Length: 348
Ligand code: PMT
Image 1 (cartoon, rainbow, N blue to C red):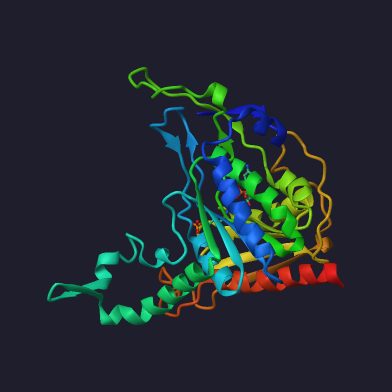
Image 2 (image 1 turned 180 degrees about the vertical axis):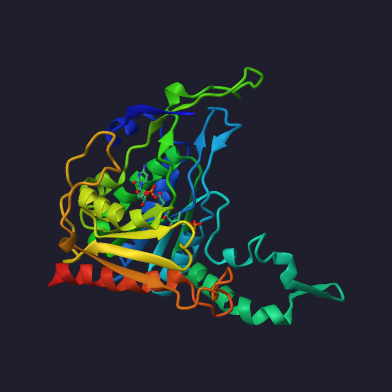
């Protein structure tokens, strides 16, 4: 596989790549949700993006490229945002983990294993009741209050259009809107005019793909689409030494408030918050075509880092159901404080 050299700007991307089916309906649902919660005094709304995006190889898609993300970070964080009083738009990859139901995922804790049968009646086995009860109560509370809206995407194209749409409808929230961009977004894609219409036939030897770079939508999101929102992006690396320099580079480049760095293998136990010492936004630097990952020079004193770690790495066994600490709880606690300060700054 060779990597292509074409570079789409965000503008040319949305100009050339068709919006997905159902975009208007989904955007309208998110708009109604935001309008409702905007009318509730003091209420805050967070957009949580979650799971991986796919890159189809054929228009009639049989094959696609994918990535590792199961959506744990997003689904878990969404629960903690709900319990902190936020209204949550959960923009997630189809079939990835979801708030509440993640506790009994097929692989970790199969649903049928929780049940017992007696004289034709099915019930949750007593040994599982204590774990399930708080989850069920939180789930019902979110349903009754209407604080959780889940919207699905699959491809990177769907994700980008939906992100643009939801950012537009959240703009009127001003500082009360938070963006928590935990989805694992593909960096390369096949534009429509390069994509095979039908299933690529085998039997002709190797397959060569030339892919284009997906524009970093963080730039317009920060600088144009939501000038007041509190924006948290994630930086994923597989080598820890890149985390802080790349996170700083993203802050310098895009000008938003916070980057959460995580290492692929340690992400469930350890993350680092990288932010400007004054906690403010700044105007990002000019875009360098094709240079989205090229760090601009920055002054180290301008930034501070805060590591969050679970004290005992063995405590997280998978689904947070038995009182174990999950790193997302620590992350969300920190974010709520920062978001409140961001809101209060404007009012003072
Ligand atoms: O789901 P889990 O298994 O729990 O894993 C969670 C996670 C590791 C996926 C999550 O914590 C995480 O790090 N998500 C971000 C992964 C990612 O896309 O990193 P990146 O370095 O490619 O992008 C950095 C930021 O730029 C992201 O916030 C992304 O929203 C944004 N981006 C990415 C690509 C793109 N074309 N435009 C963007 O704006």
